[in-house]
Amino acid sequence: NSLVNYQLLYIQLASVSFVSCSLWLFFYPEHSFLATNLALIGTALFFISGHGYDWDVVYKQPNISKVDFLQFPLLNYLYGLSLPAFVGRLSYAMYLWHFPVAVICTDFKSDIQHFIGGSDSA
Image (cartoon, rainbow, N blue to C red; front, side, top):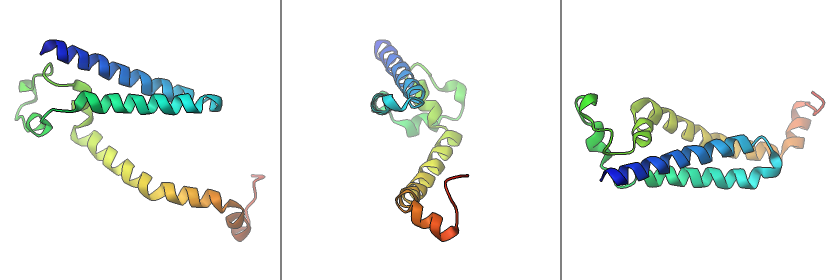
């Protein structure tokens, strides 16, 4: 069982490494394809490392010191705490509402600028 936990630790470290590299590569538009794929692989590894655990039982422990941190992936545990989970739900909801607006505004940029009287020379 401890071998599995160490393997999960390596999977989580790979996940963080891939996502970090993708964030760095996004500064270079010529590498956007590689950056996107690294982000997707890192996210998939993160989900794989946390799959198969009964997280409700883990989070319902009355005392955090009684939680055995060698029995489950620590990174998944930390992201599942109340504050990171709240921020994740909030940011995803904002993304769902604002991304279509951003796409529509991009598609109709010239019409919107003509309507409000703006220009690109700002």
